[in-house]
Length: 201
Ligand code: MN
Image 1 (cartoon, rainbow, N blue to C red):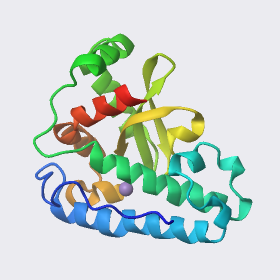
Image 2 (image 1 turned 135 degrees about the vertical axis):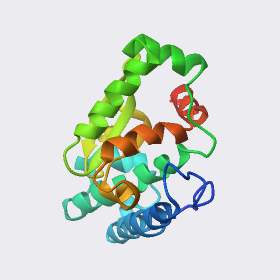
Image 3 (image 1 turned 90 degrees about the vertical axis):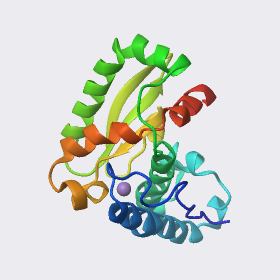
Image 4 (image 1 turned 45 degrees about the vertical axis):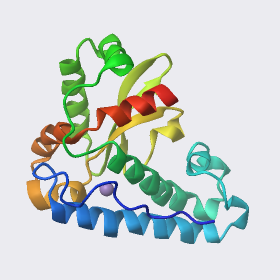
């Protein structure tokens, strides 16, 4: 069975004005779609990999046959990362996390505000293309970034929130102003979904 491109869980214009409609259309229908297509093309060469969950592939890339390892790393990561990205955003979202996740953030970062500052710093300073992540690490939380479409799963971490800082995620609206994109992005973070992921894993 091959991987599918799931539709966005909301309309293309749902995250306006923070993320514009055209960016969402191209990002989902072209970029995300291409990762899924290229992942499936790589897996087609190795029927023994068919049916494995994507996490199982990403958690141990060394176990992937060498001829498709880089394709699975890039396009498998791209598939997983974007699937998460759409889900951890929502219209009429933003605000602050509650309950268990709020406690965990305060415990790991002091305050929600200091968590945001550190996350923004990591997102803005990722050189070139990549992602910023909030991950579960041991009994606490940590902020990390990865290059390209690499996923923290490969480093033994458990991501619960990811921010795409590839230029394709923001350039049409924000051009070179990544910091403004990152700062506006908080308005669409779906903390209910992030809390669900935090509690689940
Ligand atoms: Mn992207």
